[in-house]
Length: 129
Image 1: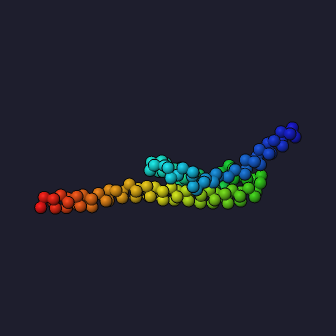
Image 2: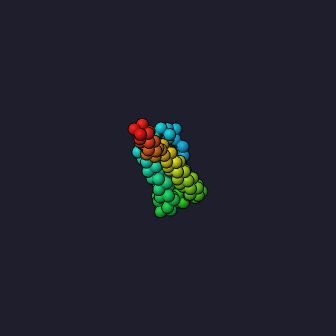
Image 3: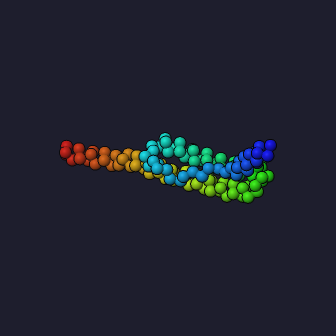
């Protein structure tokens, strides 16, 4: 009976220390992703930030367990929530910057085309004149 109580107490103690996951800001293959994949990663990062903010609520079971069984865990959860939120927002910002660079690379040739067409038409006019 004493062993069962110890196992249950240890389980409650460990689950009361649950915290949100802090994601990496820079992924190894971020620059290789296309625009759709970057958009999907941005959505995941924003979802991680939302999950972290949800974990901040004291009405959540892991926070109630932290307050009941190991009070400092509630404080560490709040600190970790801020880290996870900041990391998720930084990741979304990082991915947005990569996406903007890729869009600029795609748009630049389109911007140069009218000028090229203008020069080509001038060349044709000079040949026929």
